[in-house]
Length: 64
Image (tube, rainbow, N blue to C red; front, side, top):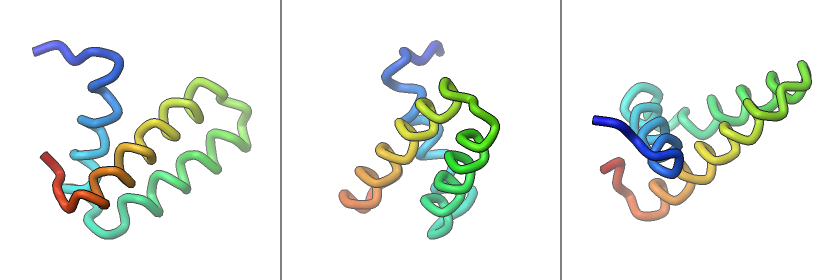
């Protein structure tokens, strides 16, 4: 199965919720900070999309 560019952040967010539970958002923020510090703009953009997906999944109470 191939994910579209729009599906990748949702898949990653779902995986991070399963892996990190209540700490998934904090993990995403750490990644954004680390990537910002090294100037990885593409990485920051992707992690911001993942963080947005995490927030939306948290609001709905679902990781599916």
